Amino acid sequence: MTQGTVVKKNDNGFGFIKIDGAAAGDKDLFFHSNELQNISFDELREGDRLSFEIGDSPKGKNALNASKI
Image (cartoon, rainbow, N blue to C red; front, side):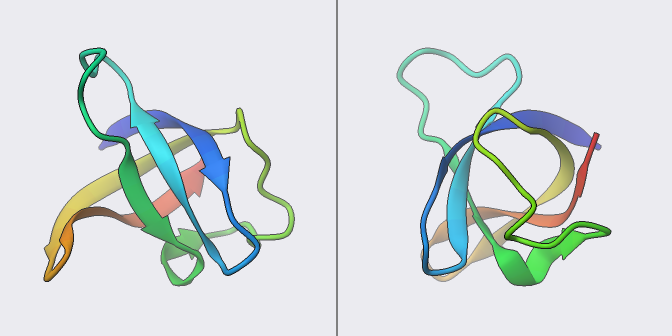
């Protein structure tokens, strides 16, 4: 599984993850609260570490099956 850090979390149930080893110009990976496993969106904080799979959506790549490390 891929790992990264939550860098932004919005009140609408989604946020963004900085993937470990990503280059400075790489886009952060989108995640939605529906993809969180064993943690609620309200418990998640910016700076928390996650492991996840990367999937494709109509709007681009996103995190799937995300779990707090």
